[in-house]
Length: 388
Ligand SMILES: Cc1cc2nc3c(=O)[nH]c(=O)nc-3n(C[C@H](O)[C@H](O)[C@H](O)COP(=O)(O)O)c2cc1C
Image (cartoon, rainbow, N blue to C red; front, side, top):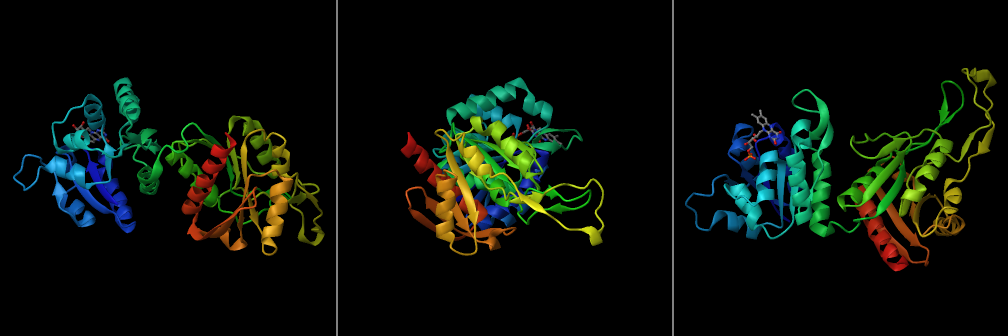
């Protein structure tokens, strides 16, 4: 993949270095355009070293080809990041008064803006109008993150994590918009059940699989709501995520939200059992004698509200995988079930198969959870199209 990144005059310009590094790690050929203002924040030498390519700043220099057109014809995708309010305004008005803005005007393939600015600037009505114009024109955006800003304030405007931008780039390059208008409810992480005032029964699920689903849905321009139990992964700010702790809370929260979605992805590792009763004080170990009772089966309960929704479950087994997967798929009225083994718990990678209601088995093999999330979403699209 050939990528041109335009860096603008933002305090966040240095954060694009990490993006350049990640893109090159993915095998991309990266060329950097710096605006004149960007030169106040980063040096051409750093950009050249990281991209291992010539740096482009001025369009009025003597070269063999015509610079802005040559770059437009060369690249598969143009990233403007950090995108200032200024470049957003220029692009929305069709202004081409420097190399980056003229490259935008002459670029025939996807353009992705990654704005970064102070909250007041981001919320400015003219900036928002310009963003709306660009989106309506077909340009892509990664929304700025929420958090502490260079001004010391907390608000929306942060340059998002480079790994999130990378995911969006990969998806835009492949088929952005494939989930536009679709709503996904995604459960993730692990539930815990109280034994006493100190102890809980839980498992080792990290929440990564569900987080990758959230990113993948958003990157494809769908809407996602996450319901997470405890997690080891850090959940990003600025996404629609609610937190629960017990299996009962997970069930209630999913029930409250199920009507909203077109597809439920149940990636949470929900505990099957809980103690008969919880002690409000610490139980002394000599008296510890746990009696457990089964939790309600969340997917079975939710299948009563299924209607035309697509429902995806996960099955983690150590033997008779296909047989048990098929039983779960039928008893919980699922459309797809992802079969994986317990080494996926807490790991970045997963070896999985997808079993469909039709009986078709799709062997995925060992992939990272981001790749698996995208493969499952591809299957969801096939099923949603077939259901129409
Ligand atoms: C210290 C400093 C930090 C700035 N940070 C930002 C920023 O994060 N986002 C933004 O839109 N403008 C920011 N600006 C303003 C832009 O640099 C200014 O609008 C400039 O004209 C943008 O030019 P460009 O879009 O050609 O790079 C900053 C200015 C200064 C002095």
